[in-house]
Image (cartoon, rainbow, N blue to C red; front, side, top):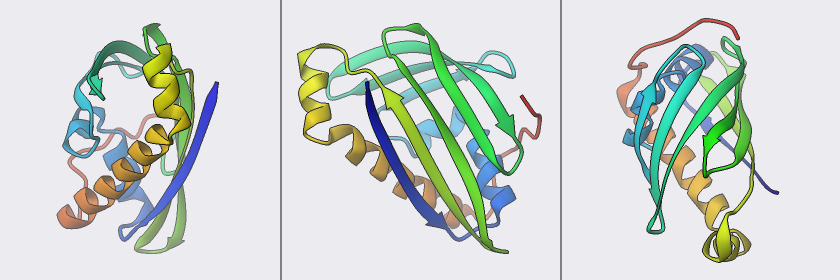
Length: 149
């Protein structure tokens, strides 16, 4: 099992950053390699990804969700094996630190080599930078789900 931990500061209030992160179907707009996400229930999402020429489909279950604080998940079906949490930390009224921690299990030689070369860490860093640009350029979230899990 491999681990990635990355963070970024976004210049929006914590509620705006959190609310946007709950809009899973918008992830393809800022996550490279995510082709589609379907929100099937309040706690179940279906992902279609294509990273480095490797296409995957899997389901992920939200295991914990606390408004303005954290969203945790784990895969439950499909080839991708991962679990993680994203946390939101208020720095100031209009600045938020978004921290993502993820455990994942590379599958096969290509993913193992990519992991060793830091490809996943670079992917996560890039996704967080694109999230920052996405939410700051909008100035507001595209929607919100404020339920707790």
